[in-house]
Image (cartoon, rainbow over all chains, first blue to last red; front, side):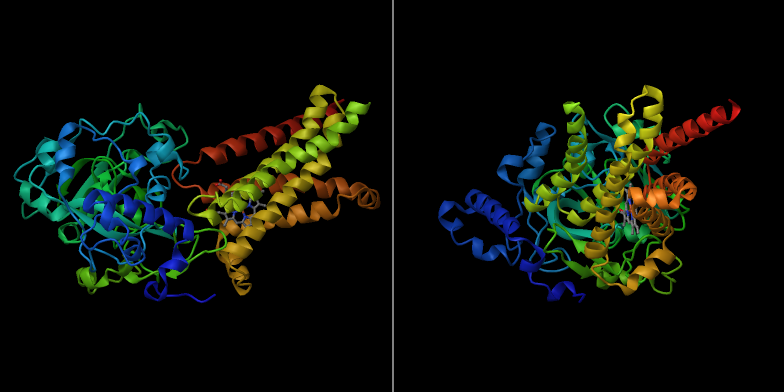
Length: 347
Length: 195
Ligand code: HEM
């Protein structure tokens, strides 16, 4: 079949009609909220273009979450909407909220895509603290409120490309990781940064599985320049709402030019180090997963090709397989970091 | 006697239930955001389940002394073939999207497809030789041929093991069932030879 570039594809080909309707519905919802009911009638016409122009994408009213603690509500009262242009807004149709929060890989809650949303009922994202260690002037264990206090939240609409060859377009809420890193004053020895996910057998049934071949906690890492790149986001929300557990509450990483597994969820530790950290997937299968894991249509996974992707949601009879772009379409912002590197070797 | 006659259609309808549910979900557009993946996993898992259910019939007959079990063995085996065929069609239609030339490459390059394909070929061979006149015609070699069903089950589990990543629970589960059935068979023929 013909493989199209994302820019050739009309939103109507990617998004089935009922999804549009949904989207119109919640745009109307948010329109009513923000502009008053009078203006809402004019809004559906912008729905197909994009959400951005001064309007934050909002979770459907019926699905909105209550704040994990009171201070969260203040933090979320003032979110800067995504701009109308790349790279902080892809300009593509959003994957509906319902799909973003029900189709997840988060093995701590189970192996199937629906497990994280159905098995995370006991999970507590509050209180939360993060341990900062290694090559920094200000190590310590910080509670989340202190971590977030100086940062203003902004919306960023990014493509998320899973290593399993599917992708979504998601409006995250967060702040640049670079701003956070600077506060801890990394030393000159800090060349890499390592992250760890919470392990709590009580509330995470996947961790209790006796047949998991993984050595918990889940670990990921970035090179310092990658961590400092303006695209790299610390997310605390999605669709203008607090992150649900399955999406990595309360604090997760978003690295949009890398495969999704790099964007580690539910972060409890950040360690600055001189050497490249071991990461979970590389430990498990070094032939299949690399430390860099940049989205690359030229390097295939042994079990499937990586040159195309299934943009979700799909229906069986309107499937959109689109071409995968190098660096997930963020080459202009990130390719220079890898100049001179053989990306088929450092995949 | 009348009741007995009802069992066969009942088993047939039950075995068709997972397929009906899938068709319903397709019609209702209720397969989630990634329907191809959902169909592929669901049909694959049912193929393996029916293979194991069919394999369990002989031991169940021996243990319970109920001949009823083996009466449905053939039909259950054919259902395994049916679900495997659906699984293969999903792959051909929605994953490969009828790029026929890609089939050979996929089978040769991806070990998990290779073993799935061999398992499927075995199921086809068993399906073709399942009618009564074939059983009669093949005589002794029919039994030998149909022992390959164990190979198909083992390859099915291997196929699954290759697909799983962080947690191999399901492969351990189905693998233990196949091991149990094989073990019982080995133990039984050992006993039979001794007496
Ligand atoms: C030519 C034959 C076959 C092909 C091309 C094939 C292909 C596939 C594919 C593409 C997947 C999904 C893999 C993934 O998501 O990574 C899959 C999953 C699976 N297949 Fe097959 N398969 C074949 C034969 C079989 C047979 C004969 C059986 C059973 C005896 C089987 C049982 C399964 C199972 C159990 C799964 C995984 C389901 C799950 O994880 O829930 N497959 N197969």
